[in-house]
Length: 269
Image 1 (cartoon, rainbow, N blue to C red):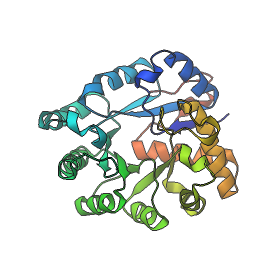
Image 2: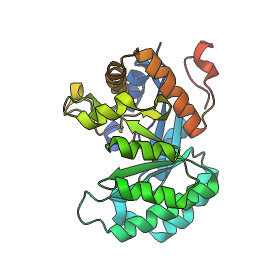
Image 3: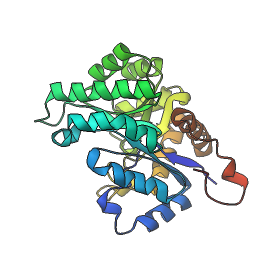
Image 4: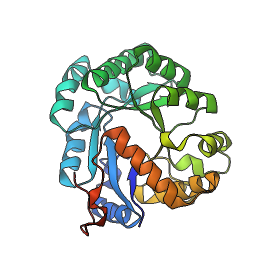
């Protein structure tokens, strides 16, 4: 049976409110039994925390996402360190830079991003980074601050940018976009990259794979990502599953899953 970790899924999203239990059942049946759930702004930290305490195998991350810049306040940044320390965070995230969407002040984005990177460094936590039209500046910032680790999720950069991230100790998160035939650049990256830096994700409810185009994304669909990557690398899905699960456990400091063969069917949280 597959043992997979969805390393980026917004399972607190309102789109799951009507069928969240069924969604988790479908996920478990597909072999996805652990989930990293990153927050996006101060307004959903409690919901992410509540979700993480409601079910084994859900691991929370807390941060301020660049797309929700208007909601962020300096006092939220002031509050973040204590929240991380007291609410079981496995990472600081989702944080980053987005120069694609118009109207998001770049200077304010940089200020919030850099401050959260320093908070992560001070707390010895990995970061979950959003970088859209901002790969070069993101890499430069991570290098300048130094001493950081984590993942650039939904990676869509070049092979050279991927190599620079690996050199900095960063993983790349790969999800639904790799399943599209036209995604030539990311397919080349995934086919040739060192497997030790690869993480699987869905970004649910966004970015569904090609077979679920137009649908709400969910963790059960991550098996399509797995199978696509296995085909690109000419190995078995089981080999990719084993490697990426170990990568996720190491990246986020998760307990090695001794539960696999104990018959319980659920991981220790």
